[in-house]
Length: 235
Image (cartoon, rainbow, N blue to C red):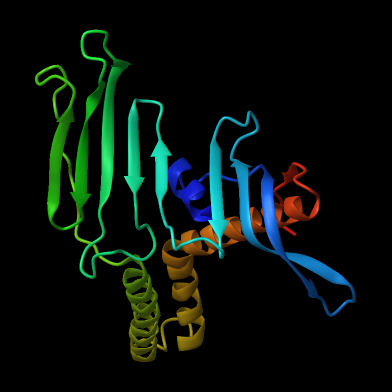
């Protein structure tokens, strides 16, 4: 849930504060003594700007039936919905729905919501349905790209990063060994290249992981303070 705020508001988004409206959990002993509340069913809000206009509302639970629905509402009358954002119900493809509404969305002569819905399946394209009286609201084209199960894609991407680093180091070592008399040692050259590779390929994911943990920490802290607004900061 925390990562959806980062995805919706962009890679530069930073959580500012969080508060919980409901929390149910269990007490667990800690090494330092005493107990802490471990949330098992929690609802809350995370703010991603000082004006508190970029808002993520969420509910996560280990008690309810397995749900994994996300809805993103934009300022241009569009809504993105996904019913299986983590583990797809289709073993081969994951899909999402993009809904576009007219302005205003209701018309007196129709008493129906006017808009279009696109079911987008990455790799397979999109199908569009128009709501309301035909011709009042034009459908729009959808774009898609190959994809599949998020978990499988995550594992594939992690493996590819590991293999990419190994191949990169091997190439650097071969080059450095062939030109040792005219340049830095193999280890020094490898360190320089790997550092640049890390900044370009891995830093964004490391930053996303850190920002996700900052959100989780603020939410947990709010739950332990009876829902107080908690600033989201690096521990």
